[in-house]
Structures are given as C-alpha cells and as structure tokens.
Length: 583
Image (cartoon, rainbow, N blue to C red; front, side, top):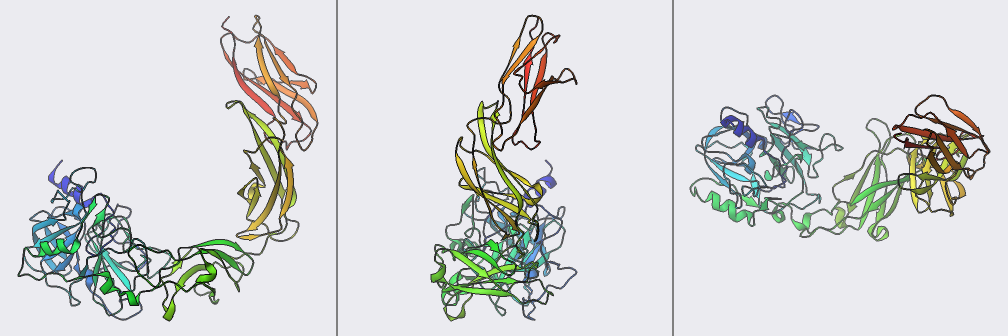
C-alpha cells in the first residue's frame, strides 16, 4: 500500500460512536458528496452562515473548523480550540508535518496527543485490535492562528445526557464531509433537528470526522465545543458519554486535557466548563415526552397514546406537571394548530390524548411537550404527519370460511379462516381492513379484498371482528363466527401411487371433505407432467390408472377436485412427484 493510500484509509476513517471535548460525537460514513448535510446547510466559502436562530446575532465559530492535510490528499476535519491547539477524531490523528487550514489561517502540526487507551497515536483507529481506544486526539500547531472575533470555544468536559433532554439553545455543526475541500455549516436544535426544517436532522457524513458542533445555550452566549464528529448520523446529539465509544473511554476528561495543554505552559489554552454551569439545574426544562403514537381518528379528531417523560440517571430536571399535544397544519393552509393539555397525574404511566377541531383530509404534524411549574417547557417531540379522514362505509358481502389444508412437507394440517368482502354500498372507501380474533390482529390493504388468518386450532369456534379503516378512522364493524374443521377440506386426501410391473401406475385417494361453507363436488381432473393431456373423472371416482410410463423417470402427478364454486379456500388439488421403476 502506498503512503497516499494509507493516508486516505486513515483520514476517511471507520466511523465510531464516541464523544469528544464536550461531545457526544458522530462521524461519518460516506453517504453523499457534501459536508454536514441537512436543510439550511451552507457552503461557507460561497454563502454567509445564518445568524443564531431567531436573532440577528452573527456567529463565527464555524471559522474554527478546518481540514488537516498532508498536501496530497483531502483530509477529514478538525477544530481549532486555541491559537496553537486543534481537536480531531483519533482515527484522523495527525502526524507531525501535516498542515491544518481553516478560514483563519494555516499552520503545521508539530505534535499529536492521543487519549489514554489509544495506543496508536498515528491513527488507525480499530476496535478489533490493540490500537483501539477512545476516538479523540489533540494536536499542537507550530505557529499560532489568531482566533475569530467571537473567540475560541469553551470545552465541555462532562458527558452529555444519553438522550435528548431539552438542552437550551442551538448548535452550529461544521465539517468537510464528502472530502470536498471546503467547510459546510448548519444550525440544529439540541435534539439534532434542522432549524430550517424540524422534520429533518442535520447529518454528519464521511469526511466530517473530527469536525465540530458548537453549542450556544442562548442567543448571546459564547460557543461551547459540544461534539467532535466521529460517527455518521445526527451531528449534535446525546448518544454516548464524552470520549466513550465501544473501544473505551477517558476516565477523567478534564485531567487529560489539562495534562496535554500543560506541555506548553506559556501558551493560551481553552477554558473548560460543565453541564451544570452551561445549563444550570434551576434553569432546566423538563425532559420531553417519551413517545407519541397515533391510535385512532375521526373526520375531525385524532387520538394518540402519549408516554410520559422518561428519567435519566445522572440528569436532574423539573418533574413535568402536565403535557400538551398539538397538531400543526401545513404552512400556508390558513388553518390554526389545534391542541389539548393533560395533567401528569391524569396521564400516569401513559394514556390516550385526543385533539379535536381538525379539518378532514389535512396532513397535520403532531407535536408534544412536557410542562413544568413556572412555565418551563421541554423540547418538542415531533411525529410523522397524520391525516384525519371521514369514516369509511360499512363493508358489504363480508364472509368468513374456515378450512383445513394438508402440508405434505410437514405432514400436518394447517387450519385457517378465509375472509372476503366487497366495497361499501354507501360512504367512503376504506384504505385498510383490520381483522381481529383468536387473540391477534391482522391488517391488510383494502385493494386485496381478501385475507387469511391461519395457525388456528382444529374443531374450534372463533369469533371475528372485521373493520374497515380510512387511515386511522374505523368504520362499522362486522362480527362473524367460524368453526374450524377436524381435517383438510376441499382437497383429496390419503393420496397414494402404486406401480405395476407393466410400467403402469394406479393413483388412489379419499374423497375430499366438503368445504365448511358448502359445495358440490362435480368431478376430478388428473394428469402427469409427461403430457398436456388430462383426464376428467366422475365425482364418485377414487382411483386412476395409466400405463406406458417411461422407466427410471421422475413424473409429476396432479389431481384436482372440481367444485361447483370457484372460491373454495385453501387448495383443491394435490401435486407430487413419483419415480418410475428402472425396469
């Protein structure tokens, strides 16, 4: 492998979930051709970075994100944290002699320091070998690069929570994903959702490894380096403890960074902070609800199952006193959001919440928040769009017929119920049909017009509910009862084939049991795969004889029972292969 090839392998890096310098990090498996992807992401060389969301304050922390390179290949990413210090992912660790370039200048790397447990300071991060370890490294610049007007970031040195807990403010993520040679930046909230389009996440990709998410807890705060990107996914997110990946963790982050910066005692070093200082407990919002799951709807309402806010070990926040669920119509629709509140006591461990006043056929975005005393509100839990629909009309010609069919491979009989139905005589067509019974539910597309329910017990009576649905809105329910047979129905049974000495074959069988919904056996059709010619036998027949079969040949035999109805469920035929004698 050439030196250049080695550099490319290391710089692209195997993404590994790890956090760094206030980071819960994500890096970048290649998945597109640009950096930090998502709605609102900008190429910083051609487009101004938007101000802090909801304000006119311009920020410049993105200028600290840069590209380490050996002059031959496009490296991944890194972030300057002081005039002569940069932070990157360990799988991008920088050899002496590399250069680092950002919007503020260029300097040469003259030293690199890996985290404790990372035995290979030249990179090559690999969890499967002794070279594995925390995916974080710090490099020293031979000459200083002056910082931006907004200053260098503070380093967060304790873990972010494992999941989104509603940290305040916004994050500006920056990196050169896609190995493009320039930095892209994008704003997200602290759940990782794009500020431009909350339904989409800001995503780190291949080449973003070592880039940064700069956290601004409020509109006028200084930036905090809260993520070093080391894994493909949401660029700012609470997913692992700081410096902790599946290859190991840094036991004391602050002690380690202090020991590295102490190697150059006269140089400016980054300040450090903690979550308690950046987001004081007294100011924290409650944790957002655990889940919001669509349940049912009418033409003007929608019901959800709401799960209360979870608790996280090591995280303190106000306990919710209540919750709000709202449905937000599309922008420009002229409609107003509709919502409802429920107390924490009424919700308990989880319950149903219904929002009314909706317009049929409109796709609403569901949102939920936890509420706490003093007006504190959690971050937003958003779901996929839901559409209230009018109830479908009652299904017509609803039928259920139990049957049994023999499985020759397993040598067992499978007992099922076949359902069929037709369009409503009046009212809206359904989109799906739900069948409930025997302790289970099955939902099928309306267009199929039929459904099967199997794995039932023989000779047992079951009660069924068949309900049409228009989206989540149910229509009138049909109730039916069936009794499974004791054995196979509609198909010949006990089928055997016997060979004589004259290359003849005699096929014998037992008359099939009548389908549970009735029917008259008219005849049988029988034949072999050696010829397109078939024989028709009377309904009273129980055997068939044929001769002149070739010796030592595999022959397929089929036998079909013909009924006076073409909708017999299960199967009405038997097919098997026989081998004729060699002589």
